[in-house]
Length: 447
Ligand SMILES: Cc1ncc(COP(=O)(O)O)c(C=O)c1O
Image 1 (cartoon, protein in one colour):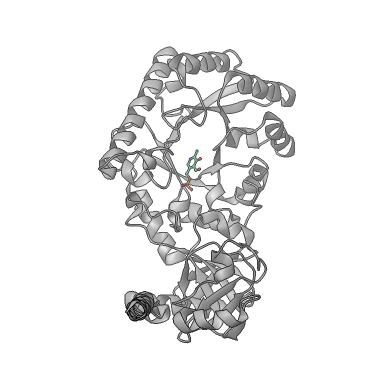
Image 2 (cartoon, helix red, strand yellow):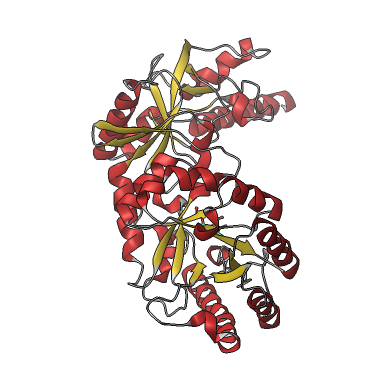
């Protein structure tokens, strides 16, 4: 009787396990993803992959930027700005002279934000034909690196606003000005809630203004920079409302600084036509679209990443922006039923259960940590997903079913998480429709 019960128990358990395995059996991703993607998108990615495959560096990894989509994003960014607000392109996020030049020409903007001082002379020289490019440092550069820039290219003094976060740095810059005999333009960093640096109180701001005013041959004020990078992360049940409130709080704080400075040192705020324009900078990709119609003293808004909308920029504020940047990585090897070290026998069982393990595709290089958008049905192989990361860093393994449309030499398209991910590659192809319009190179990744 007991034995009989045990047998029934085992049979029921076996059936339940088989049922659970059958229920949990993965679907063929190449087919399920094909059903989810619109025919227009599928056609878009297929022709993009074909175009890259035929490009001069088709056999090597490269990045692709879609100019039609980039133009659309740029138009949306500009549409959010009022007539007296300027768009400042963030070089750190779009590190390629060719790409920066394209954006400046297309938008009419001559404002750049740079995070790595050694790039300043290069940018000013390469873009000299565009007229007076204006550079604002996005983080305070060590005074020694500012000095190097000015030694290499003294004209940079008129073009660059050096970001100053406290009195000590201001004095170091005054020393650089004395030594070089150049007058430096100073932008004061305001802490408008991000708490990453900059002056926190009106008293600190006025003290810096007094120091600048006391050294008129060495220093001049060019504006303020108060980055609102915390705003997209505002907590709240109603996320959209929380973000809007945080953004309004930034404007209030910015205006308090502005009013205090204007009352204390009105000479900087002259409104005469020939008076130099002060830049009151804020914003970034995740907030710039929210400035449309917002009462503010900010007249200079930065944007970089959002113009190509990488994967980490899926915020609602950028809902109207389209992804315009892809990484294109060739398939180096294809193996049907790829064996796995130590798991050779057992692996067959997994493959029997999961059709997405049927074929292995080794990419050129790795580890590509970005969502795969084409061909459909590819996923990082077990080595890249599991605890042993980075076992095949130079030839990343992807797996897929027999329905994945990829062969040796075909191109896998990835959606980079950050815009500057292309900096690791040697070529950036600018495409429009079915044509390659330009081939650009990335800048040094040191930003
Ligand atoms: C000072 C400053 N402004 C603007 C930005 C926005 O850059 P992006 O538009 O690429 O997010 C950043 C990003 O780090 C920043 O530090």
